[in-house]
Length: 386
Image 1 (cartoon, rainbow, N blue to C red):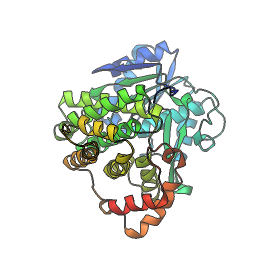
Image 2: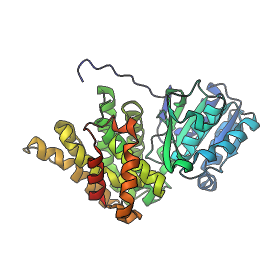
Image 3: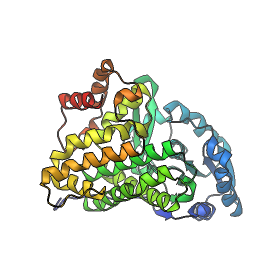
Image 4: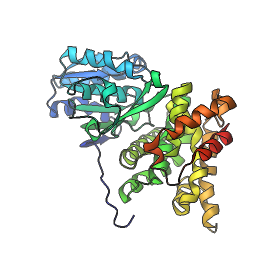
């Protein structure tokens, strides 16, 4: 990486810590907001989390319109009614509260409030013309890192595929990360989102676009996940574990927002699009297989991943140390209950050809992979995962 030029972007402000969500109103006021359009979900509304954000806004004299009819794993069509409601409300600021579903939807809505056309017009890289209205994103899960990244991911039914809006203009003005919001996340979701964060960190750390800055965040995210995910799944009320995972998710989000992902996400996109496997499960399941394939590309970095996940590598050869990374990942995924094979999520041998074809179309991610990927490689990986 000597002499490599790297660009590094994050939100203008990140507020992190227990109780940080209470600052939402003050941040909205600082951004000049008078009326916030709050994108959340029915579960958080039922738990009272949404109302707490509204109360924080109200305490600063900011009106709030709440929208909770978001679509889980959102499709492109689900964004239009949300954007229409935001425009109708007269809001001048967007607050997203929730998991990746709410945060990606909030990003798209903020963008569409100042950009003409529909969401479909902006699926791709660098197509957004101007920043949207000011936005504040507050995650309630520790996984996607969507509060940090320039990406917003949506299902396109006509293509049976996941596609993304990728633009630095969609990075929020403020990210608020409060571990207290994750205390009610159930074990299965904690596991899938936590392993999703691990996929972000590992892929960013080993990507073609990695830089010294992203390496710092990615490796620390890996270490935190290896330390805290098992506890967070086994005992969701353990605040130290929740705090560690909240940091890990954010750090991994910073890493992928600047270094990107690669083969695991490329393999996962058609699994999500063609078979509606959730984003977290798809990435979590495929991560050890992708790591096994990529380990030869950078023995030093994959050995560092193994060590960060708690594997003793002293005295091992570089190859043996690197191979420990996928082993450690697989053991972690087993311990937290992630499916280990494609058959466990309904995939059969006859589905593989379409999955291979779909993965090979995700060229922006495959180009970022540290090892060259051929059709026969994708086929072999998926056959092994079956």
